[in-house]
Image 1 (tube, rainbow, N blue to C red):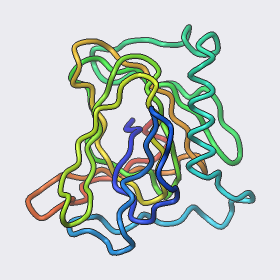
Image 2 (cartoon, helix red, strand yellow; image 1 turned 30 degrees about the vertical axis):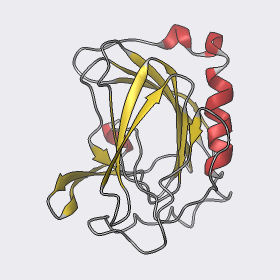
Image 3 (cartoon, helix red, strand yellow; image 1 turned 135 degrees about the vertical axis):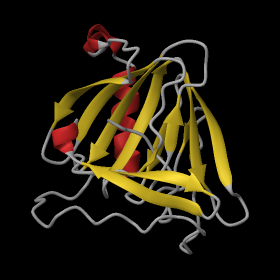
Length: 199
């Protein structure tokens, strides 16, 4: 399963002032060249409004500070990233993911869900597309850093460090689909889509 993040063409948050956080790319409302069309808005069957990216950031950061609630679940897999859903509610869900060196998500969206993740242990790298003058953005995400993003965000998250990493992710509404993209000369090209039955 690909749980990660990328360029948000509708920034939901202002800039963060804390030392270990960052929000979406903050791109303007004009869609950068090569940025995929936004995923569909979650279905009208949702009875509650989605949580904001800022609220989701708080959820994962506070949970990261309580390792006794999740550390015993962590497993490492040499085949692919290991993941486990820790909580599911009508308006959001929380996932725990472990990453060995070299494991990555590839570029993907979140099916219209807002989200946030924090690196609880280790260090990761995030790739996303900025505006026309920014091109490919690469961010180092050390332990303690939280990322929050809106419903149109697309990114690639990877472990390029020498040791394992553990992350906590929250999505609102709960993920219903995720599309995958290839980064080509002209920008991102959608290649496939997956749903909960594949997770």
